[in-house]
Length: 479
Image 1: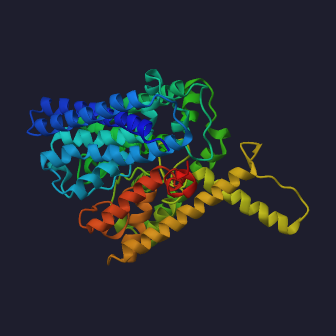
Image 2: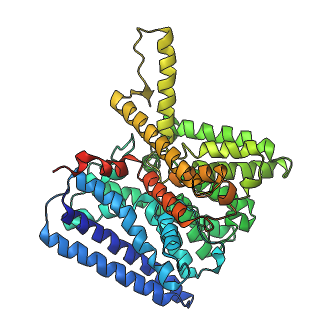
């Protein structure tokens, strides 16, 4: 692997992070807050370091990126971006501990939404906006954002696209990768603007509306309020956020097709599976809430929190850690598949679970008809064996990583419920779990070692296992 072009592109990513901080600086200036200097210095440091790497390294190496460099850039990009993203928290003193500041930042960029903060509302508006923006940048992928611009600088992007979207479905919307990135970001910005307007119509201030829209569309879950969405106690806001969490967890090419006049949602097998799962899970949870709420309120809270978990957003309209154990089990199981492929959500992705179930059903049919050739089909097309092997390998690595991380976290002295739910919430980029990390609690009281383990799980989960683990193979480092 060639280090120089990797450092050059990482420099651009760091520059982009620094430039994004200027938006937070604008809010800090507008509200006349004391964190202006900390945000400005953080932006200048990021831009200076990024510009040096981008400009100096490009003079040394001008060749096109190869697949190895692509994987390295994506993985290290998700490690370096949170590093510089943590500077505003550190320099302002809002989060003076480096481990906590980096955890908060990596949780934002990976759209996990797991926070160490016990009093979110004590942060300045500038820092709250930056916290929300880390999710918004990470939601579509800071690397995908780079793809829209890097070709203009003479750097190839196809390898980055393959590494960023390492799932079973990575069809391009257009033949040109830059055009693809611009289309995805256009859809992303449009959805954010529409939700912001609807939330303001429900009584939210512009600041709260845009921060919550950033978190919703990115399926991140960072709120500006300690009680999350429950703070607003509004059925209208719950419905709007539920709808947009569901939309954000759906394959983005389907949204683009709909905007182009081709409504394909209900012809897509994954969308069908995702929708049915949401309805069934909501129906299973509602009966356990009727002792505390009336029927309509029970449906509202059940649907909100089911979609919040399935989309890997992590907002909460109620403290589901206090619900009946059966309702909690339903939510815990939903954390594994989580969102759809090609969305901003995390988890194994519903398409993988669906194809795995189809494969299992086919094996049952083979027991009855051993000589029959029964292909696995998705959207009417036969799925190739190498894709099924890829899915099997992914799920095995996912479960092995989940088990290993859970054992490691439990070994630090945490109870099993907290350890298990924290790991799956981190790997699936959901945020809140159960036990000590419930929706109305936070990760601040966990040992530093656990925070680093969970931070690693966030990055591994966000990059869908293979992109990170390929760096640990001997073949990758051979010349």
